[in-house]
Length: 539
Ligand code: F6P
Image (cartoon, rainbow, N blue to C red; front, side, top):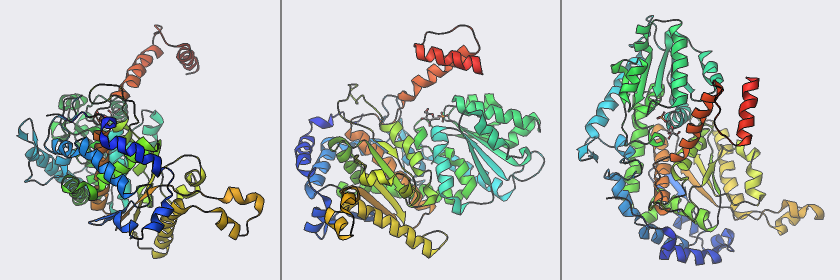
């Protein structure tokens, strides 16, 4: 069984949406609210500790009906079933897509090629738990008998962004271990991190699904070399562990077999923080918190899998996003968390969303003539209010935005929390209503300034209000976006789980690297040739 291969633009729902858009583009949300005092209740989903209000969107009940019909016509329900049942839905790489198995209960069954993967998943979880406890309690020690104080995660892309974002987001729950992340092949990155380390008390976690990634191997080798200035070869077994599918390559690097945490090819890199790729998360916040993160994601999985589409959070958010992307032709979406802890959240989602759905060939192998993946960007509020909000409020571009907030703060400073939340609520209200000429005049504004102070409003937002930032609620939030990615990939008729687009640059970089040290020069365009010679003359 494979995924359905339906061009969304050929569906009846799409055609209805096209004509419906012609009416809706002139409708102001303000009018929709004033005509229907139940609008907010109608367009809000309350689930567990999540309150998702999507009423501040340029949609009517008809819009929603057409969008839900679209989901039906592209066979979303069947596609969800295919994903959860371990079918080879990553067809271009010949793999199942089962990050959901990583957070499922021990008694659940997830089969790949007829074999239940759950026993293996739980074996690795047990290994993560045991290892975490040994390091955190100080039972496991470095080569001179000292306890570990620092952990360095060496990885890039999905082997870095997920763990880095979660560790940062959950810093309130952190233990005494100091965590560092080395990702960029820029040697200044690794050297800045090394500066802060003591080889006797630092644990290195090398994370690479393939164990062939240039950046990760270069950084791991540089760190190993630095480490061996102070320690001998045997000490490597105490200080270096690896997470990978490529066991042979890890052994070749010199890592002890007991220190390898396996993962599987049915876990995509950008969906892998739930596997042993999250080892650094477990070390930083303790295994129980790591497990709560997984439990939260599992709850969202169950919601996504079982809930009717009209009250299904990831499905509704995905459909609304398609509405703007394909009918309003919005180019980007902003993610604005009102929590400094979620500082890295948009960066993390950029890989998840853009590496998955940045595709221009459909599941039939045909070039696409409609828009796919949205551009994702964002920063926490209130900082972003003082940076780019001007453009969202008064610029010429339509930028649908997700506002994510928490009703409770973690440190309990109510004064700050009230100020933060008042901004959180005020911004979506301002984006909805804008400010009319009459309102500007009533403020006593000078005539020549009036046009500049008018806000059109009608700028769409979703409000995702969560009780508290906990490992569990963070797990739910991340899984919510993962499922949104899936739904959009299905609608756009693309394969979301490959990433061939990142390969070409890697291949060319390898060729150019060889040219730096040889006289043989490959054929390049004149711009690249000039730049290459310039670098050779200066470096
Ligand atoms: O370059 C893209 C990519 O393949 C990502 O999809 C992946 O997360 C990252 O590189 C790192 O890959 P690996 O874990 O194999 O080192």
